[in-house]
Structures are given as C-alpha cells and as structure tokens.
View 1 (cartoon, rainbow, N blue to C red):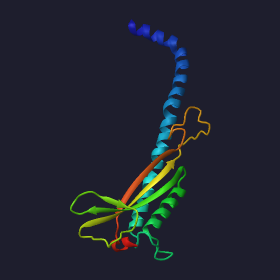
View 2: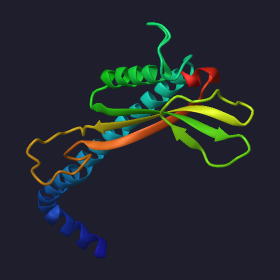
View 3: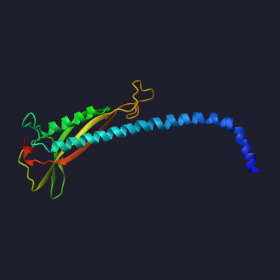
Length: 181
C-alpha cells in the first residue's frame, strides 16, 4: 500500500522535478566544472613548466663551461639553460617565463650543507670531496584558462588572474673542469 502511495506521489511531482533539476545542474556546472577545468589547465601548464626546467638543467649540465661561450655553437651552461627554457615556453601557450636563475650546487660527498653560487668557481673543482650539480630555477606566470580583464569578482591568482610560480631542477655537471669559466 505504501508503495502505491509513493508511486502516485512521484507521478504528481514529476513536473516539479524537472523544474528543480535544471537550475541544480546549471549551478553544479558553474560551481564545479568551470573552476575544475581552470585548475586542470593550470596543472597542465605547471607540468609543462617542470618539463622545461628539467630540459634546461639537463642540457646545461652537458656544456663545457658554466658562464663563457667557447664558440658560437658551443654555448655556456647558463646561456644553454636560458635558451632552452625560453624556447620551451614559446612552444606552449599560457606560460610566461619571467626569470631564469642558474646555480652551481656544491654537495659535499661526506655529507653536510649544500652551497649554491651563481658565479663560476674561483678554484678548480675538487671531485674527490664534492659533487657539482647544475641547478636551474625558473620563475614564471601561468595564465588561467579563462582570463577576465575586468575581474568581475576579485583578482584570484590562477582563477581570474595569472599565477606566479617557480620550478627547480638540477643535474650532475658532467665537465667539472669547466666550472671555473
């Protein structure tokens, strides 16, 4: 008996159900789908930025020198990293690299604190006591999927405005004798 009563009530309410579902679906789309798509786009752009910094550090660590270009075709690690990162950012939309920082990370083999410097070594590298890594830090702005110049609400980085972030990667420097140049 209760089942029959509920079936009759559901039949009466079916007209009301449709008028309630449409606004609820619209709100769910606006509240959930648009921001999740925007944040998914930011995640993808950050993944592309980490790929760019990884490639820049990898190619820079293979160079013959740290600061000085040895020939027009043989770039220094700093110039190779900068060029690689900028070229990667041009390939993808929504990524603007604002700064490229390169460092020599000196890691003691016996343990201890890692020191970083952005200048060439003053004395030749001592591979028996230290490991030398080439580190690249990219500072960038990631554009959201939908940009609003008027900022109809407030400027929320990543949702209505650009998100400023950084990515870091390092590799073992292969030619430690070139760290003084």
